[in-house]
Length: 178
Image (cartoon, rainbow, N blue to C red; front, side, top):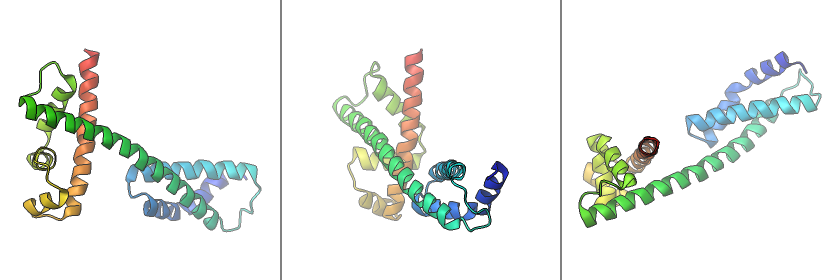
C-alpha cells in the first residue's frame, strides 16, 4: 500500500480515532499522543500486511486506538501520580517548616521556591492551598467553605499542583544554574 493511500485511509477514520481516544483519555495532550501512536502503528501494520485498500479499516483502527489509549492513559496516570506525590511532599515540607519557623530559611532553595510559587498563584488558588495544606481541610470541607462542588475543588487542586510543580522546577533550575 503506498504512503499517500495510507494517509488517506487514516484521515478518513481520524474522527473515530479521536472519539475513542477522548473516551479513554480526557486529556488533550494524551489524546494527541494517542493519535500519533495509532498513526505510527497503522503505518507499521500497513507495511507488514497487504490489506484490501477498499475494505473498511474502521474496526481495526478502533481496536488499535482502544489498546493504545488504555496503555497511554495508564502511563500518564502513573507518571502524574509520581509528580503529584513529589509535589505533595514539597507541600508537606513547606507546611512543616512554616509551622516550625514561620518563614523558611533563606538558604533552603526548595522551600524558597515553593513560597515564591505560592505567592504567584491567584488569591483563590492560594486560599485553596491554604485551606487544604495549612489548615488541613478536606476537599469536601473546602467546597462547603467556598460554596462550590467538591469535584471542582479536586480539579482545582490538581491544576494548582501542576502549576506549582512547573513553577518550582523552573525556579530550582534557575537557582542551580546561577
